[in-house]
Image 1: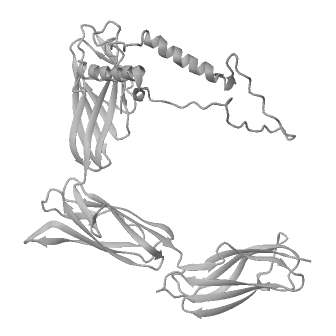
Image 2: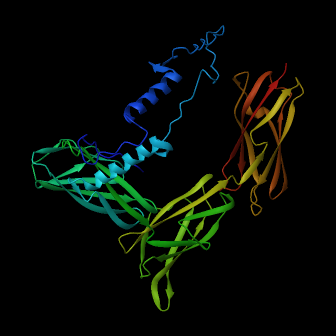
Image 3: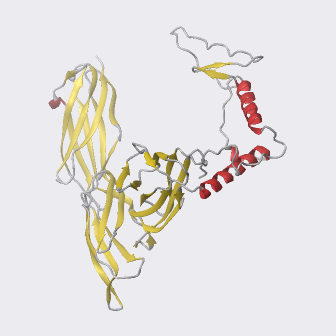
Length: 443
């Protein structure tokens, strides 16, 4: 990430040279920008003002309802596309890149904060690393630190000056008066919440005209303190693929080894997600316990439908622990056809109508038995209907399949019919399933 350096005076030695062929480059860049804007049309107060010589965009036609029709994109409706000037070819791109280099040189050579870069080294994921840099007023006059700004919620910044500690909660509140030669310190705490290199910045603003803004960069590398292995893969995610239902159970094993190759102990874990059971024990290697631990357990039954599982944090006898993510998608144990709603369509007057519902166990190892069917919230023409008017016939085909015939009787009054069917099972662990129905009884 390229970050602009502090503003520089025109008299500074580190003034970037102008690229050849670009005289009065600031004016030239400004002229290019003006020409580009004029070519497109100036924008003011949310309205587009066409440039001189450009045809005006006709006003959108209005329908009888008074609604404006959208204008299709075209020559009179150009799109402005952003461009990173440092990636441009030619003299302008070279000039911008040269400015960035000069800004980085200025950041490294400024005298206010040393060092401007903090390498915090390796850190276990979700661990916290601390770095300290010192600041000093290098001028002959009293200056002020006007602002210290964090750039990430993973940071904690504490300023130590004149035997006082000030924690920066977002942006520094009151400015700090720094006499000539006075020194202080800035402590930067960074939470490393991911694997790999992480770089954050703390931005310091002063009243020194030669060094208005300084970016202090802190970096660390997130590593796994413990290696977790599931099904032969080094991973922190235990994913249960294939068909899962509320009645399914899956066994698992996870091997845990320390990266330091020194014995350790698992001393506890966080609250387990619903339907997850586990235990752990050390595995002996060459007469030594604790070089590896084995976590065994069971996922299900009793899992909630939909996305199931969750994160479990394991505590160890070291400063850090490790985390495992258990995941699986749980389908309903019983599938119903039709899946959306039961449609009776048009029901002929005084004839009634019958429709069939088919229930199947999702898992080949499961079986079920329908106990009863009831009608709830039934209405016709907006008025409640006696649920006892409906007729049901339950036909068990085998242990995994059952048909239910639902009949709207001939004596049903006319109008739009709608409601819900609630199917109950004899197995207590199976929750009742509901299916909406609708139709129109002709008169």
